[in-house]
Image 1: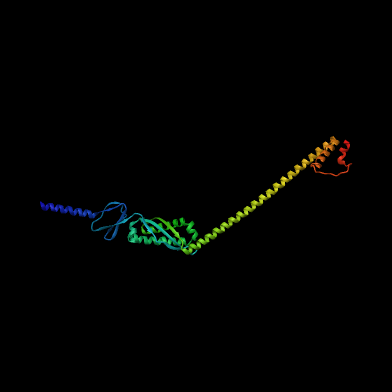
Image 2: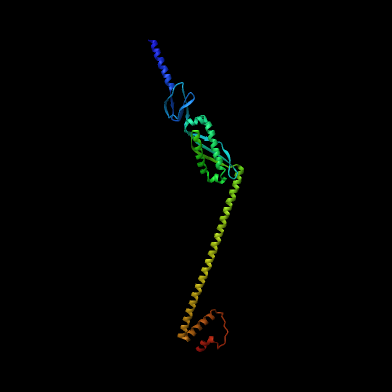
Length: 287
């Protein structure tokens, strides 16, 4: 009885061990390859519990989460044959684990080496087509878009899906920085001088136009004033003439009084005339 119990327990234990050796688990963050005597028989396992033949099959698991390729800053030549220091990174994950294993041996470090070479070749090609000003200020997004498309195409041959490529920083060596700064300063000074020249020209044009308008306005005002003065003088002369024509003696007497008033406006005024002068004709008549 005890012997049969031991046999049953031994059989159950062997079954448990065999079952444990026949099952394997793939987590949500993993993918796997199943080998049979060193040959790949199945790949790209989904997360869950899976079956294998014990002692015949073996399983390798790989992390299918996002991986980061953070490259060392590298020098590249621009179209002006000037050096720039570029720091970039890329994000990738395993897409085809069978191809990933056969091309890079399933080693993420080796995959980073291959991807790093693709990224540097792409950066070298793109920077050689552009000037420093273009790569620093204007064309960075276009460079990243082109580089991302290139890396995505090349990475598929490694069983890798490229998710993103970014340029973190573009620096200039000290000698190039000074040269670029001097050129930018000269350019800004040229633009400022051009603006000042245009402003001075516009100011002179406005000032000349204002002077012309002022001269025209003064001339028109003087003309109008002279015309009105002439019209006033003509009306006054006409009034005087009419008044003189109505009563010549009274008009002459009134004019003489005005002449007396103007001639003797002060106490010390002295006027030496002949007694029979026309100025005293009304005084002589009063006698």
